[in-house]
Length: 273
Ligand SMILES: Cc1ncc(COP(=O)(O)O)c(C=O)c1O
Image (cartoon, rainbow, N blue to C red; front, side, top):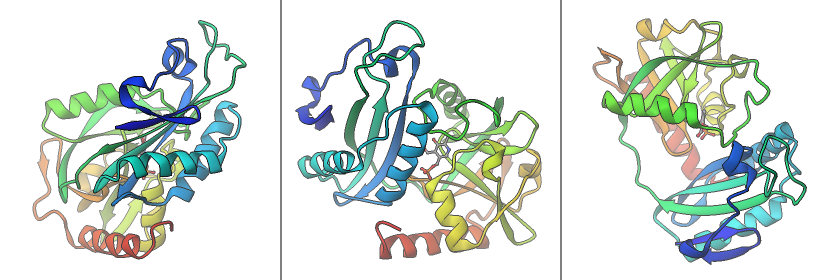
């Protein structure tokens, strides 16, 4: 495995950043996870645009898109896996021990790992912890993911692959690494970005391609939804067959099945929508 670190490709065991990197010491960093198929990226332009939005939100210098594209191309050329998780990480760089950021400039790391296509359906749980829709980093894809680590571990304990959060006012928000959609009376709904969820790229494409409504909904809408699905770069559209103890028989239901089909078709016809 070859990894791009600060301007060059290195073998994995030689790819190093400082132990004083602000990404490591305080989680001062941002990232993107991009799906790759046969060595080609999906929706890279949208990912780079979000990387820039996240950088600006943290006060990091704008990432150089040409450099990031070159880094992605280099790691994929070295390792053109059939299906990959391409990870772009951009941090505050070498810094003092504390929350002040140093002035040596950001760290850029790009790596790809092989993955496999997700099953069409999955189990999810709800968790009692909240997403903060009014935080300083709300909506930014930061590397401070410890809350997601804890919630996802809870999901794994219950044989589920995702955990869903409400926000601080009790509205449905998102999963640890995915957005959520529900079907009510045959209509598709997903929480608005003002709920505090990440503006997921798969979410945006699903809204665009499948005509979902962006609707503020209480968390317990999950208990009465006819169908539920989650979206992310690596899941695409994935149906939920169990929520906590509730089975959703027949998943994927008709609306979800159509969204999965439309997403697959549109994504196959344009690698950078
Ligand atoms: C917290 C969170 N929400 C939603 C998503 C889904 O976003 P995307 O479709 O851009 O992968 C992610 C992606 O990993 C995420 O980390």
